Image 1 (cartoon, rainbow, N blue to C red):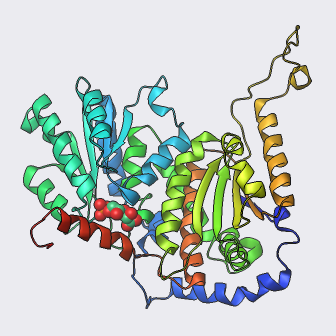
Image 2 (image 1 turned 180 degrees about the horizontal axis):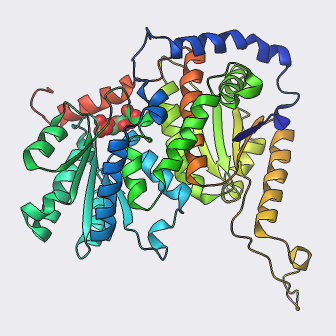
Image 3 (image 1 turned 90 degrees about the vertical axis):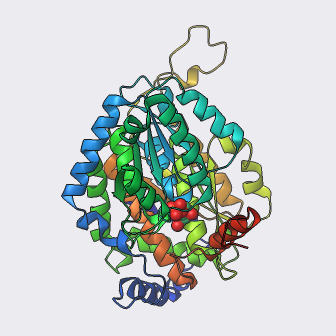
Length: 433
Ligand code: PA5
């Protein structure tokens, strides 16, 4: 479940303003669920949580177990929607320090999302004396950042293990019927998982793109899909009191049309940092087109209260916030009593650190709201697989609905394609002059 509170919107929106958007919302719902969809039809993610092939899940789990048994490192090569979901999920469930934890599962490195020779060389060096598996993710199979990095890591693996044994350690996740990566994988005998043709990169986290890495690190992919399936059935309802997803989509549009052009998503847990990166890509690429869109930004508090807090509080008032909190804290870290009380902190002794963190949320929400920043407050129960699946589906569907309220196609990204093609032409790729 997600709890959506409008406590920090009071006085900023009227019931009538919200009502005015209800027709737009109903229209957006109709379009998104229409058999004859008018835009780029990449809606396969909508029913994915209840349409998944058990056979494919089983294959993912079997291969993930092999990787757990034979590798110290899993290198995930991909960019944009082809890596952010997996990274978000790993950090959300485990930690942003996952690689440093005392664990029995492989460390995970994400590469191929830039072409920095320093970044790539570092990971090549880290992999040199470790057992490594490669997971190359590209739906199109042509994205330069990804494919050029794949070439470098394939060479490393072939030098370490020989061509035949290296094959056993290379997984390609790509389109089921076309693309260069698929051709290479078939020719070389690499293992393949499919991305359904009806699902675009930024909506692909619940396909093998997210499920395979999550299974490698020991995540419960069935619970993840169950969370998404439950969200799917709840968010079919047009009654706003029963549909937090539609309420969120509607509210952000009402706020946007009152001059708040930037949405800052924030949370009080560093493990949400990458989740917010995934959220930014989802909303940024889906909504930012045709001269429209709410610019998605993110912060981690308290960290950013000491960098961006001043601007949010007193700078150009173009922001609204969406704050995501987590109800359960599994750590119960108690601040100890100290006889000397040199630091004058005994007023906090016997309190949990989570209690103090909660007061930081309440204090910042109070201060930001009072200075004119509207805040949508979302809360989930915990950072487990079920809640993650639920939350990811919540944002995917709210993004698609919100894009339709805005009047843009949520599933294309013409600007990104333009840069990809121009880069190929600058690099003199045959056929791109
Ligand atoms: O969301 C999207 O569709 C994009 O961000 C893509 O995921 C990204 O451009 C990578 O594309 P590909 O998977 O084809 O390499």
